[in-house]
Image 1 (cartoon, helix red, strand yellow):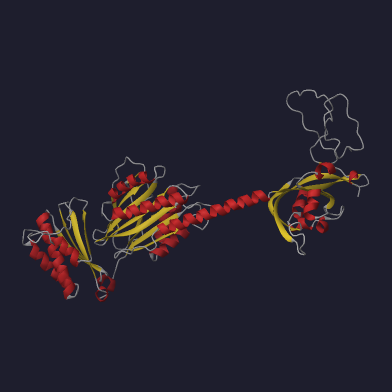
Image 2 (spheres, rainbow, N blue to C red):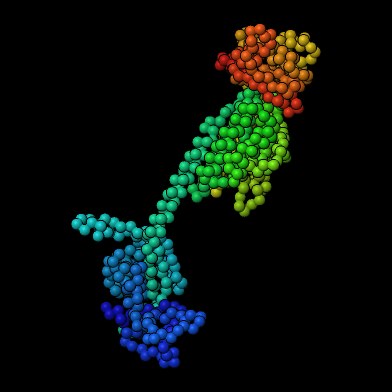
Length: 577
């Protein structure tokens, strides 16, 4: 086939002057430059150019065959509704093999059909507009890689194909027909580089998620009076892991600390900062400080860990004797509490700035959380959406929480589903649900409270012993445990009478797992265990308590004063009477 009789007219191009030497003299056409196949010269610049000494080289002397044949990209020209082959350049033939001119593409360009380009070429013919498909995987036999073998090994590459409409002259000087110019650029290096980058990012994300999960509680502590469950879901695969975290800490005397927070940032660094804050919270919680004091300490620590990263946090303490949840917030979203009637309330102020900002005195608030109540603590990933106000998200959570029933774990799952959280969600989500169940029947027999106001002077001690003995007997404790409880109550009351100030109170509490004895008074000086010398007549009370009890502790009370407590673990046979 004589290709010199073929030509291509690209849409929208115009023939320009061949030389700058003599603009007034048009260039005479030659046999080497057919009018239908010339490529336009470059446009003139905006300013005058110096006159060259000799003739200026132009493209008018080159045929389409000469131009496209030297292009390193793959080029093919087809025409007609069957996409018959008009031309393929050397790069195309080197990759896919030579092609017979005039043959239809479905038979001669089978690689294009395998790549799904024939339908795209049909669209280009119909619409007259170019179309592009990116990064198509092309597999060809690599005969050079194994010249002595009988079975060529496949070679894989990636090409971006662009199909552009053009008019193609036909043999015999017939009218030009609509055709398609197929241009394929090799993007294998770019695709492989992008894949390496994605692999590296995926490994970094997996490392961050592993670090994040390892720093979260592997198993939540389960308080006697509360049922607690939590869930954490990292963001989607395209989202770097954040610093969401939660924890449940039993404080002793039936009290429980609950905490949830969010380090602002992404990746391993945010997860590492989260782990340090969570560890610090557990350490500060052992001091049994009020919630706002815990946040005050965390605020200073967060600035020391990394001054460029801040975090939000809620720290709350539940006391079953008071039936309240005392909390402090550092820039975090409000706790939601559902009462026994199903009405959801938002925990009101106070809310301070996030941790790490400094210069703020946090304060504590409280909300009722008695038997039959539930509460949910959560991070912003649960309720925040890019196209919605965050208050709308909190309101949606309130509605979902009002209708959520079941165990705390079931409620966690239902809240996540109700808020539309999927595996592809663009932010981390942490949810912590707690229930204070209203116990009836046999369960109610395992939970009892009894209290005695300690009035008067020295006669308060024998009255406290008699009260403790009668209560423990009514709770059907065995004689040995009853004697230990009476001794502990006597020592705590004696310590309070000697070192404390009124008002004083003795409180006994029984759960399904332990006996708790607590004495409160109006003096805020905390007792400490010390070694008494043989000649000392006092100083042995706390040592006796530490010896006979499973655990003991003390804390300052909000109204000014202190509480000293001890616990006795119940034997299994007495824990389920």
